[in-house]
Length: 193
Ligand code: 5GP
Image 1 (cartoon, rainbow, N blue to C red):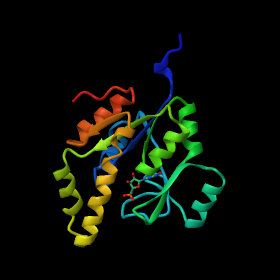
Image 2 (image 1 turned 45 degrees about the vertical axis):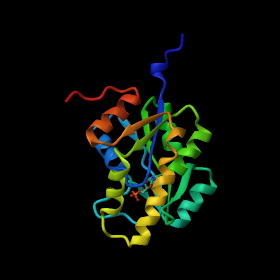
Image 3 (image 1 turned 60 degrees about the vertical axis):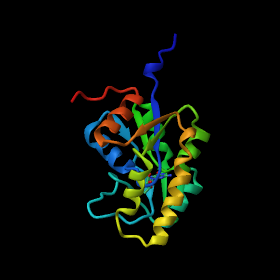
């Protein structure tokens, strides 16, 4: 009989804006070298401390266009109406062929595209501990106008409604705990604490 445990796995982690996907995936990158975390291409500018090839491949708009037109993007999306982000198909396929446990941390639009092309992947929804906590995180930054805050909350409601499209929900009540749960869902052993 075929041993499913030896199969390379692709796991997609998505969830609403400001739920802490970036923090959880950074934790996984720093603590679980056995997870192959995909490095996306993006047209946005690097933030201080971000390195090309580590956090993202920072590309020009023309280069992104080229990657889309040559079919090199497994999925891609415009995030927050501004910049484009995409997963490089070949690097992911190579890692899967090498038997690695691959994790994509992408937005909901991207997750839906992967579901179309790779329905056998595991889809994990990262959820906030509560709606109130989500509101606190979204508006708490204090950098947006009331209109922008309202817009973000409307978007968050729509994003939360996507949860039933996913195989599993992980609640981000604690970064380390959520990261360990995701790693377990990937079929890997979480580290003992
Ligand atoms: P940031 O600019 O803060 O690093 O990321 C913004 C958003 O882009 C996050 O919600 C993240 O999930 C999403 N994102 C990062 N890489 C990709 C990607 O390759 N594809 C898609 N669809 N979204 C991505």
